[in-house]
Length: 405
Image 1 (cartoon, rainbow, N blue to C red):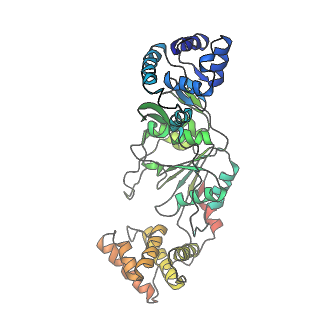
Image 2: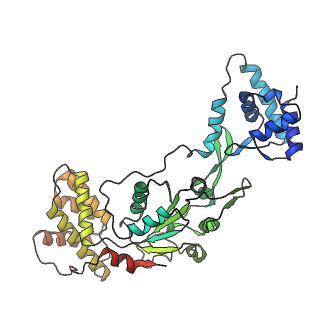
Image 3: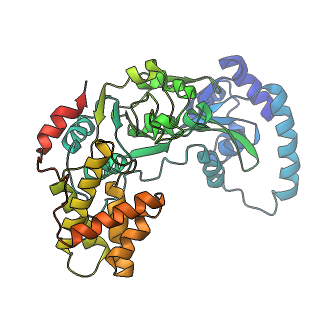
């Protein structure tokens, strides 16, 4: 009876050293040579692959081990066999499960959860059309912090039941993090595909969140951002994106760094990298009418009582005045839509409006905090506060004026 080494040698002569084979390739070759009998059953085939040093490199694909490596593996396998064969029933399923850890998102549902109380506004229709098209059309979304850039992308994928893989970019993010690398799994070193490869093979959207925090190591994504395949040089494998794959990036800047120092850590991104995004969308804060709907939605979500519309109106006016002053250069801080949501959540806990506001603006310096609290006190008392903008642009005008092609 042929040994495992002899079977591997026959396969090497037929296909070449380190060839990538399917089970069918192995069966057809050994059957044509008249030596299939030792591994004719499915269980025997699985044990042969697992004990002979075959490495799984793709779905149903195995890399042929070298003869030197297989001899060592065979000796270990014989020792194990002499110890456990008589007492332990060999089950081929766990072997497959161990190998499948390499691509552990195959059985996961990557459709985001719905966000209760989400209000569609601004560029939602634009982004929605891109997602619905299932075309490869990279989009770069920029805007100040807390205005709903990432939430909008996630919620639209939830509504359309489209899978999304979100990757938060940092200065440390590199090719290994994005495309994949070798990991130790159950005592064995295996190549684990990164989130970019996972998204390409699933045909879903890759969200590069806080993209402007990355370094020039993001240039590893150049071929990916062209809609082409990418060659994984660590395992000599070419990956072609499946239909439906796309890339969306979010950032607080346009990739040119932060001149005012508000977004410490953001970097100037490579021009060739930015040029590969088809469109850049500037996301503003919502209009007063839309923001009030968002606040009331937060009240409905967090509180068991009827939404306090007067409080919602006051918060809306308060945030609008602060933003106008910020854009005019009067203050250095701003109240984001996210911070308004924080205030509503605090109010649902403490049932005290001023305490909720004070807690949520305490992260600012004392002068700014005191001026913000004083401003709300005046608005709550019904005083006529200067600086309120009565110009309420329609959402269509906002979208038209802020999309760059």
